[in-house]
Image (cartoon, rainbow, N blue to C red; front, side):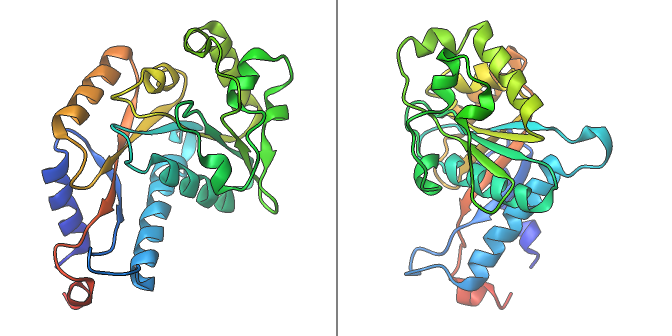
Length: 247
């Protein structure tokens, strides 16, 4: 049995409205911890995702991509963080990961950085956008954390100030990945999505509601957002992994 065939079959059942760009597997429920083979498979799928998004030949490759879930808890934070790390390890230029999830910021915790200044503060202050980003030690990856400002943020996210800051990000860094709040719950993803080269949706296997995903897709299309595809996260094995390996 081909794993790619199995992946596509499940993807079609989970979200027929999308072109699935990749799939990140999860261990079977009876596994106490993921095996090395499963961890390797997940890493391989993340690498494929980065290659499909950023490492295309010629001028087709986007420089700025937004990643978001449809609903809460679908893993867009982990996907965007892993993708940024992989991309930074494969390109000579600079990579910036932006935490634009103003509802539940978390990327600063993953990279063990502070969240005193960041994306939201850059909307109010005049310093160059790079002044709010923190470099990940030993790499060409920068994190622009969410930041601490929350006042009048809703109005600001739909203003010209956001557009100018996003333009500045692309001028400052060679590649930009943005993690946004769930698209079904908040308008931030659509607002930011119009300012980047494309959007990738994260769908959680056996969790994301198909109609919710379809509605987000339609809303993006109506707003003029370029939907590049979707990632099927936490794909589970229908049988124990020990047997799956023998197929």
